[in-house]
Image 1 (spheres, rainbow, N blue to C red):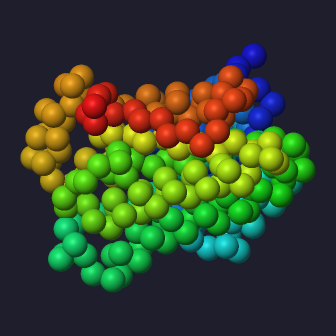
Image 2: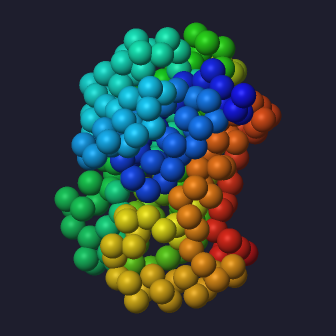
Length: 243
């Protein structure tokens, strides 16, 4: 039996990158997985995983769509144990190049999305007496990095949301924690300035960027009963970059 046998998880942003890695690992560890993404290619990922997975197209900034996702998860799998707020928007620009539309888009996906998700899963998790919510933040929310104004703002906000929700949800048996990845090899990151990425990678003590599965393994631990006494934690996974 895997460490997640019997659990049902919703993972947003699961059409690729870290979300896909999390979905595949969770299923391998015995979970039933609801993959969501605004990109329809997530359906092919769910089909490849097999009967343990379904895909639902979702805009995480829509409250109505969150209710649809939770309702379908309960209908298909009968319970809900885990939420991974993985979906993210990343368009690095300094403040003076950040227009209102870009700023609002970061807020919608990176802040409003997780807020709506946590609210949507609260009642079924409380009814079950337990649950694990994992918010994927970033080391951009731990240090002052120029050129990432909107993205960093939202990741700092997600840290505050995680801590506050952890304090509010704990009595219901729902654990809320955050993962703070450093540079991970995903299309979201690598599609931007390759030279800048190379310079950043050279600063990492391990000398390499991380792989999506390395973050997925942390998420699987936080989703499992092995982390039953971890609440409100911020796990930094950046190969020592912020030491």
